[in-house]
Image (cartoon, rainbow over all chains, first blue to last red; front, side):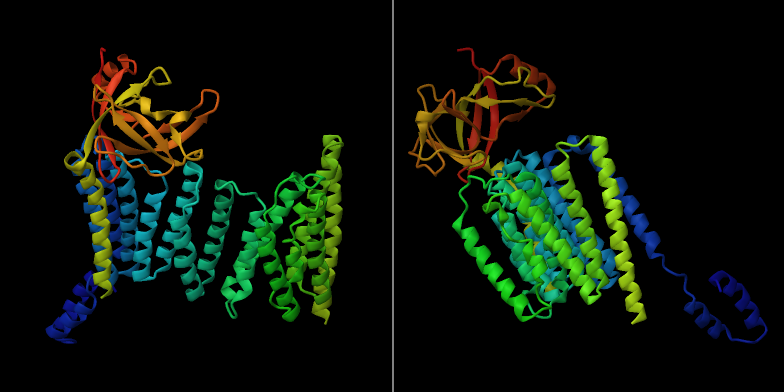
Amino acid sequence: MRRIQLEKESKHWVHDGIITEHQRDQILNRHASPKHPLLFTFAAIFIGLGFLTFIASNWSGIPDMGKLSIIIGFLLLFSIGGEVIYRTYSKPMGRSLLLLGILVFGAGQFLIGQMYHYHSFSALPFFIWSAAAFLVFLLFSEQSFFIAVLVILTVGQVYSGFVYQDYHIGMGCLFLIGLGWFVYKRQDPTSSLLFAASYLIQSLILVFSLQFSYYWLILLFFALYIVSHLVRGQSHLKSFGGLAVCSIFILNVFQVFLLGQESEQVEYSEVFFLIWTVFFVYAVLQSALESTKFYWIDLVLFIPVFRIGAGDFLSLFILFIYSLGWLLAGYKRERSGWVNKGTFAFLFTTFVAYFQLAWDFMDRSLFFFIGGVLLFLLSYFLERKRRAIGKERIAS
Amino acid sequence: MKRVYFYIVVGLQVLFLAGMAYSYYAMDVYGETIRLKTAPVDPRDPFYGDYVTLNYEVEQIPEEKWVGESPERDEVVHLLLSPNKSGIYELTKASSHSLAASDDQVVIKAQLERHNEQLNFYNVSIGLNRYYVDEKTGRQIEQAGGNQEVEIVVAPWGQKKITGIESIDR
């Protein structure tokens, strides 16, 4: 019942002697007009936006000291306000304000840098920004702050790669040690997945900005794969393995197109093969000892074929072994997930092989036509087989 | 206790931002003023509305003035500058490693842009290639056609800024 309605009604109740005036007050107090947190939030956002657009449109006219005061004022307002609201009133609202505080600090750095004509020789501003965000994350240990730090670090590293052709060591350490520690501790699948994705992006930046040969990526992806199973009982790290396998699969596809028939005349680093051997022997031993840890089928993808010669053909061969491996293992153990994975990999590899072999000498329309028919037939047989397994399973 | 740490973190952020502004003004007090001669600018029209593009003679380093191994692109390099008779600073030597300066010399940092192997010199940027001006003065600077003296303040902590610009009729 609404309060206004109740006020009217209860007057009659007192008049009729059903309740006393005191009791009526007590009842009415129970129906105190509700707060509207959503409305308050919107009101705050609108006032904030109005203020921001006002500042933005007059920004160039404001003297430097005024700009500085505005930036610091907003930083204090969002940070302190956020902390107080987080502690006393509403966690989500406090969190949003604290996030805005982190944002203002980063933006403030760039605005002040622009105002006073700072010239940066590295991605240092991003490092300082991410370090500040990391400290806030340490104090509140909220996932949204974790994501904020991760995004700042990843964007900063991409910026460093593109603008300065450099991988920022400080940000790399903060990422691996700082965020890595929390991924290990918190055991949260989402955080682990995002961490792995950022790791892959940063691997690309590291290898290409420092002009290493692409094959170092194999080692970086392999490291991610090993870590996914290294620690006992850390099932949240599964996404590491999944992403590592996806990446190395794509790398092999690139090798099919980019590696030539002959071994390339490049000096290959001994260190690469040394580390690779350690990783590979470790993984093979683990997969032999414990079948649930590593799957030898995945390990095939990490073989560095670029050294041997006919790298394009061997990469293709590896991709087929991987696909057929999962298909056969799936049929044998009646695991539909494995069959699906194998099917997709097999169809994709067939397409790659077909593209590689037939593109150069076949008529284009014939190429696509035959390719389509080939894929159609393949998917038909694979699907039939997959369904047969499903039926057998139900029957058994 | 957590609150105290949080306020320390926020305090550090504010200090950092304020420090960025402070160091800019502190250059006037602690910095050393030097004068550099500009070099012609490509493109022809260096005036972009609110700033003028400037190049400096010291940004072109002949290979014989280079000390140590050849730098890579985007690497930070150090320039040792000494004043000539008319008080304008000129390049003495350059290197990827830090250089020692005597009393009248200064060392400034720059970034390698490219190595011109045909003409045997390195192109670097000292990071002061934009001078923010009013619309009217911008045109005057542009008409001087790259023949100017620029007054620069170099702080002991490496920061630098342009404090003045004038055309030379010499």
